Image (cartoon, rainbow, N blue to C red):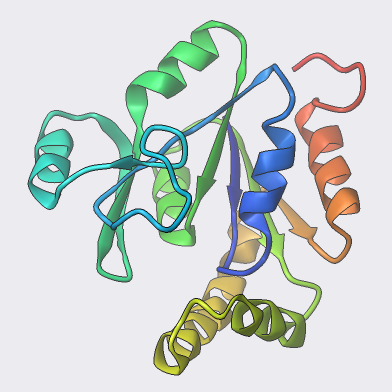
Length: 183
C-alpha cells in the first residue's frame, strides 16, 4: 500500500493521478456520503452512497478505515486493497490525515507519504484560488491545515510539493515505481 496524505490544497489528487498512470498501480476509490461535484463519476472518482448505506458498510466490515470529514463520511474499501496486493500491485490510497493516522495506528503495512506545501502562503493561495469554498470554509480549512502540518512527523516520508514533477518523481523513487523498477 502506498498512502498519500496531507492538508487540503497540497496537490495530493494531482500527484495520485500521475502515479496512477503506472499500470502497476491500482488507485483506491473511496466511498463517500457527500454529493458528487461537477464532472465526478460514481465508481471512478468515488463510490457515492447514502449515509444509511455507509453505516451498513461500516457494520459489515467493508472499510479498512473511515472518517467524518467536514460533515461527510469517507471510507477506504478493504476488498480492492486485498485484491491488488494479492496480484502484486501497488494499492494507492489518497486519504486525509485522520484516516492515515488511523491506518498507522492499526499498523497497516505500507509506505506513508505526507504531501506538504512549500510554505503556508502557497497553501493559502492554492486553496483560495480554487474558488470553491466560502470564506468561512476556507478559514476552517486553513486552520485545519496548520494543525495537520504538525502530524507530518508521524509519516515515513514528507514530500514538499513545490514543483509537481519533482514531488512525483521523489515518490516514484521511494516507492519502487522509478523508471524500470519493479514494485
